[in-house]
Length: 428
Image (cartoon, rainbow, N blue to C red):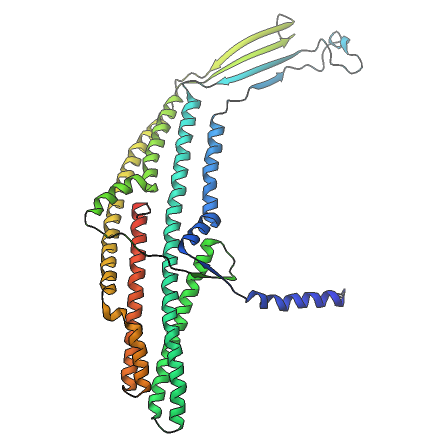
């Protein structure tokens, strides 16, 4: 067995043991939601792949425009001819009296088949464009929800961290007081228990945040060694007025790519029906041929024409299938429109509910002053103006209220995203 030289072995060992250390370093990237969307449009791999379908459809249009190639055939070549035919053989030259024939033929498509096929493939490209837009619509909604979830978890994690710092300071102070016998150890235990519960919730929140980070970085196609922090932008959203719903229905018909695709599929089958009908007309093949010694004359030049006799097969089955596909696609398009209207109505009702609830919280002065109350309760506990039980109860209420406030803002954000997804438009 060959031995590895010592310098090479040491080099591989250093690389192996140092690379995990480098892999643990996080690079923090701070983005606004607008910057995240711009990065997503530029780098998302699924979007890049889906966009290639449009180029494929362009290639199909180019191919549909092509004429059939002419066909050249050489036949009836007589290499073992008579002695008279071999008289012209000089230094390996082709015998001048050898019999052979040459034919050149060209297929001519009739009934405008080529242009009809081009029209059909052009509709296919339009369908590919709408399919791309539909994928983009779904991925943008997913991205925006991830941004909303990540922003919520970041904010809630900050609330929990502030509580943790306060409880840790109180715990250290109570440890000294308990050691001096100034307070009962049960109060210290109660405080430590509350701290443990808080730290457990912090771990769960950070685990959820890690999952959202994974999904977000996957959509943005950035390194897993990066960590994203989102700077929230202005979350002002339109007021859900009752008369807004009717205009959303109109917007959906004009903007939703899946509804456009349903209409285009009907158009595609209509073009397909026209094309299949044109196939009933037989194509013509024109030919010109030259024949030497193959008939009465030594050098014969002739022209010809050939075509099928459409007695047995007039493409009846494909024509019938295309006609059925037209009716089927129309029914499916109507069903899509019906589903879309119900989706918009549901999304609007959810947004209206979430918007009103978040506004109610924003107008509650008591909830907006929670941070001040948190500082007051902490000072009162240190001054022994309130009991430990009162303080722990307030801490739980504070955390629950903060979570409700942040959750209400997140739900309003997500319900608005779902409304935009249902209408297929970025509403303002």
